[in-house]
Image (cartoon, rainbow, N blue to C red; front, side, top):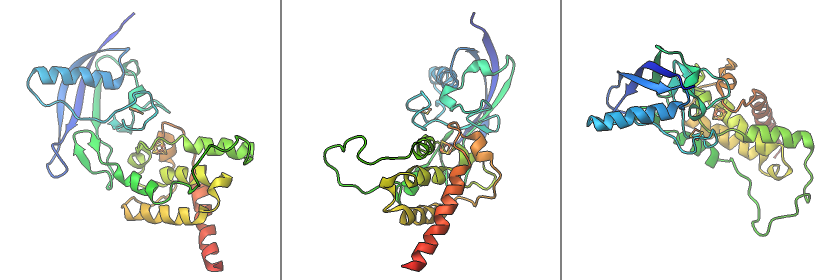
Length: 253
Ligand code: SF4
Ligand code: FES
């Protein structure tokens, strides 16, 4: 069975950061089996056939892995389905006759490049400021040469699942990036390999995060609820703990 849906889309169109944007209305028919991005692809083909500009949106893997896709669907980052990226959202989640509001992630550091595409290089800057470990490269070490506790490995793996999509920032009333930064800090601070730079790392990443104009965390928790990877608020607690310890370490030096 292939149910077709008749939908009204209200899509945000904006030429660039400087120009004002507006909602544009489109009537579309979509198969319930299409992904949300395929539905937009279809609309873009129609727009191009009519000599109009296609809607700009970001994507890459379309498998929920890369973090490229993402915009607001009916006021929620990646839409209403929990733990689902925009590329993995299917039209069967919507009702025939529904009106869907589509707009870009809105946060001060995420400036609009065009239509639904925003500049998330502030995330790259946070990672470049400390989201790595310095190691001698060479041949790969034996798998068990550095033992890691199972609990730490599991927690680090959960934190490392962050795909850097930005939904946490877009859903936060303060536009805070604590869940993202916490995930990046946590997955390295739980490993022996992450210890030498642990406290410098957290200071440097938090300083960079603040300089990128993200807001401050006031524990709403919306970030974790809208995260497609289900990153837990525990990573924010870990970040705050490491940050506190880092100022103590600094005083001891
Ligand atoms: S913490 Fe979740 S919502 Fe935030 S960037 Fe990472 S994957 Fe996306
Ligand atoms: S396109 Fe890669 S996560 Fe959606």
